[in-house]
Amino acid sequence: MTKAELQAVLDNGRFHHFLRMEILSIDEEGKRVVLQLPYRPEYQRQADTGQIHGGIVSAFIDIAGTFAVVAVVGHGVPTINLRVDYLRAATATTLTATATVLRAGRTVAVVDIDLRDEQGRQVAVGRGTYGTQAA
Amino acid sequence: MTKAELQAVLDNGRFHHFLRMEILSIDEEGKRVVLQLPYRPEYQRQADTGQIHGGIVSAFIDIAGTFAVVAVVGHGVPTINLRVDYLRAATATTLTATATVLRAGRTVAVVDIDLRDEQGRQVAVGRGTYGTQAA
Amino acid sequence: MTKAELQAVLDNGRFHHFLRMEILSIDEEGKRVVLQLPYRPEYQRQADTGQIHGGIVSAFIDIAGTFAVVAVVGHGVPTINLRVDYLRAATATTLTATATVLRAGRTVAVVDIDLRDEQGRQVAVGRGTYGTQAA
Amino acid sequence: MTKAELQAVLDNGRFHHFLRMEILSIDEEGKRVVLQLPYRPEYQRQADTGQIHGGIVSAFIDIAGTFAVVAVVGHGVPTINLRVDYLRAATATTLTATATVLRAGRTVAVVDIDLRDEQGRQVAVGRGTYGTQAA
Image (cartoon, rainbow over all chains, first blue to last red; front, side, top):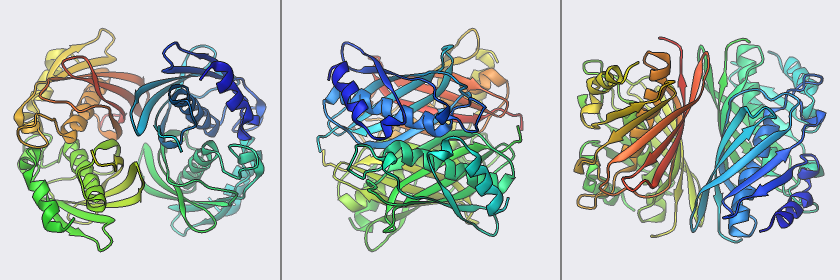
């Protein structure tokens, strides 16, 4: 899928009206997608702290992984499972997720997701398994 | 912590104004917490489908796990990592999360989270590691 | 598959000559398998400590999960991924693994594995995803 | 720790007499360790297939992750949890594990482990959480 097509899928999601992500790039061979999540106060754990809730982090990581697989297979895919490791707190920062497909097989794909803050520091890492068969 | 104290912590969170959870119960020995998430259209993947977004599922599971540990140790705790396995789609349903602390040690706790829809069907399972030391 | 058929598959494995497991039971609906691993000094981390190596624990958990799926689908299956959480050290003890299939779908199965020592204490828990399609 | 000291710890383990690993390198800042596991027929799933058992793969990944943390903190550490994703079968090949510490904090460390065959193909990836406090 092209960047414009993927962005249209993103914009069309209902939960995505809350989590307002932008697709930055899709690499040439379609195995890597970069998404950005600009900061909004609604994402905070506690008001006036700026600290982004872990649920926002994991949701963003899941979506980045999903879109990396969608870019490769060309249709919507289900998340089978996801592991997220939280490495440092993210405070009032745009988050950038880089999702790389390690393997896309006949039935499942495995994706690594790297999440960084505006200073380029690793905030969290994710690893997910996604279905690859059309529904 | 008591149910009222935990509910106050929940209500105080900023992201929790979007994800409106309710604590149903804390068992006598404080190792199990049950939370409920009533359905809202904002949680949908695509508008008018009723299907709840995976990011909502994983955020709710993470929070349930966190609160099980908080109930045991009596203070806020960080999520170290979380794995979520998605078992079936959840459509326009209240979700009930039961979080059980398998082990609470000096530095970390391990928690199992079981997520069910209104019909009692298992929607997803989570397993998380949380820090237990006071900040 | 019957218990005798599954035991024959176990006994036929080359690595299984080192890891000498025994199938204790397969429940009526085939969704749960119980395996036992009697202690051998070769499994120790350090000589003369009795402490069983984590690699033995995770290998045994993986095999128990595999066999639960094999019992359901009736043919060999690949492990897609596995998470193991270590809860307490196991010392010079027979280990008993109970593997329960949470979901067996068209392409993947999800299995929970509970590992206990002779005193019935939980030593580790595993959760694995396995392929279900015939090769 | 130096390479010779780590190799001595490896050689001293009882299970390691079966799983005969060699430390190839420790990088300058001690955050990355490379281990090698030469092929032996005892590692096979089924005799005469050459296919290395998944339990060998996960045990080797766990040990590589452990040693990366040991190299950083200078003492033995427990595995708290480990996720392994299997990407392709490994057949009659030496395996090389590269373990990189993503974060080493006061209580836990997070490590990524990359496992490759002699042709440099990715066989599996692991991600583990290890304790960092001295016993």
